[in-house]
Image 1 (cartoon, one colour):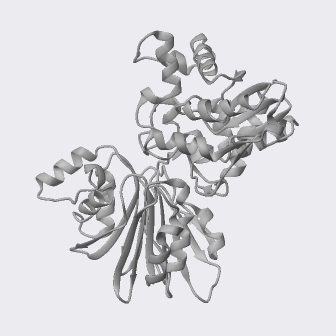
Image 2: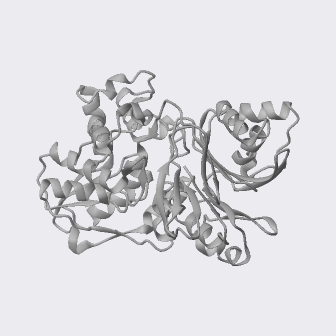
Image 3: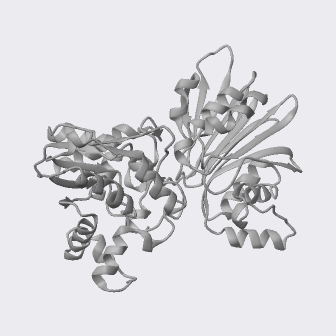
Length: 467
């Protein structure tokens, strides 16, 4: 998914930028960068964070940089922010999201005479594509608007200029951008971020969320709306289920509270007997706490996450890296596990390989008596079109099950979407058997929507419904 952070201030902003960007590290594992504008013009730093944490990679840059405006980015696909000289002057740009028609856009721009620097892997940088499209406009605001109209997928953008930071949420509001203002009223300062949870410890309070498609300018004198929000909103539901950090809040809905409500719904529809409830750390913990509160079954920790040095095992792009992180980060506590029946809440089952090979296996090897898995969302049936989390249908656990049951790939699997159908029950049981667990029961989509708390027509549910 990636994350963005920006700050405008009348004093040096680099410390705020450094820590604010770091608070987005859970949204990516590959690339990070910062760009600042100060008395000496633009400065930037970009590093890989695949083998080191953000703070350790950028601490030397942080000490050398100075500026009063700045933007930062965490991204798995392309290194950014990038600085451009254009007809609008010099500016820096950072984006987050996914461009699904990237090849077509690049070819069209090349035919128009554009030239691109080559990123690692031979791909074109998303920030560079965005800049070329923005430069086609009569001004930056119209350029951003026309850029979003041409892009298929979803893209949020921060554009750092001498006037301040232009902040643009993607046109359907699939991913968040929040604005914060300094608590110190004497030294006015404003921030914008994917994660509003980054504000509190930096001395800011949440002012509001940008609406879908909205564009605003953050400047030392205040925040000005330049393009109003659109009439439609489709926020990514997975933000509350998995992607967001527990203290995160999106469009007024707190992640931890939504996860607790998910767990309560799971418990209400369950009747399994167990000795304790637990969550796969960290993203399954909130769901498990809600289950424990609703069911009265005690919460215990059979697995703990060794946090230093290990990020999220879902986000790295390579399977071997995901497997290594999953193996090393979870440590089993045999004294808690041995001879016990346990309900294990997880945020979701995507591919199923990590849960099977690195979580369930550790529980059985340490003497578990029964393992009942309860994911906090329905079976994922379609790859995401708006972020780089899942890219193909074939890698999803549900489709491995369907392929095994049907003996081939099928195009119409509507029966498997019906939770009351025999085929749905067979699919779930195949996944249960493949995971090697005692029982498996998924969250119902109507319960998940209610737990999140936004109207269904304001949520993106493509991963489950295909629309």
